[in-house]
Length: 86
Image 1 (cartoon, one colour):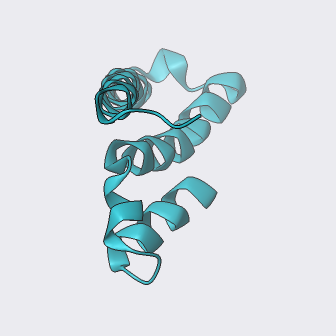
Image 2: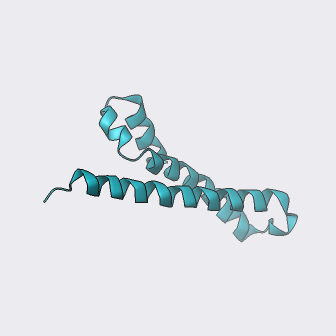
């Protein structure tokens, strides 16, 4: 069972929308941690560091199927794989 072009577009749009929301959340976490010294506690530091990995993964998912369509040897595909693996 394969997906139609319209279904693929819908999935890609949902993926990009969710990634954009996650990027906004990550920006909020980073800004809050850097600007408010009350958040400089060990548990918040873990969230701050995990947020950077989340940023890389979200940029990778924002690329969506464009990396795959560029080809496995393409720079975009390899960048996407690197971002998601890191």
